[in-house]
Image 1: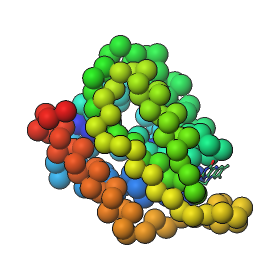
Image 2 (image 1 turned 90 degrees about the horizontal axis):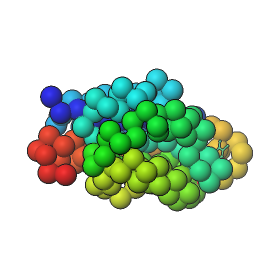
Image 3 (image 1 turned 30 degrees about the vertical axis):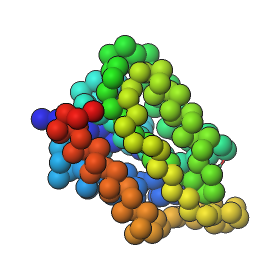
Image 4 (image 1 turned 60 degrees about the horizontal axis):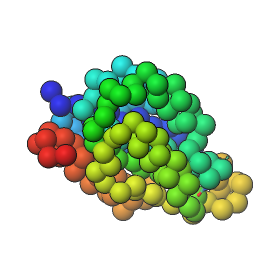
Length: 161
Ligand SMILES: Cc1cc2nc3c(=O)[nH]c(=O)nc-3n(C[C@H](O)[C@H](O)[C@H](O)COP(=O)(O)O)c2cc1C
């Protein structure tokens, strides 16, 4: 069965809600494996037919745990996942572009095929207190995540990528 691997990290819950929304929608189209970044490994990447990466922007870059996933898996799967489709979702306070750019460069190194532009959800958290608080992602943004997850999974299942 066609499988979509969704790998995510979340410090304050936003990326987790986004990844779960995408996974719920994708499950209607193909098999879905939803893994936290610390639990995902090379074997998950090798088994899956396509990928959705989701995480926070921290200090203008991917969060450390998301980066650690890529650092740990990069060479074990290099040359073995070329051409597989992927998309990414970033949860950010106000920007998100730095994390998205960094993730895209890693995906380019793996020769993955970007099939959707990065989806960036901004929580508009500005103060330290707001940034450290648990997040509730609005329904409209979760709907964008669901749409992305469903489209990615449907495309995978139909083999259109
Ligand atoms: C240490 C730290 C650094 C952050 N740096 C940025 C940043 O550079 N740009 C940005 O837009 N948001 C930044 N944020 C805000 C987070 O991206 C935002 O709170 C988002 O909701 C985090 O996603 P999460 O809820 O999945 O952890 C930062 C948050 C923390 C805790």
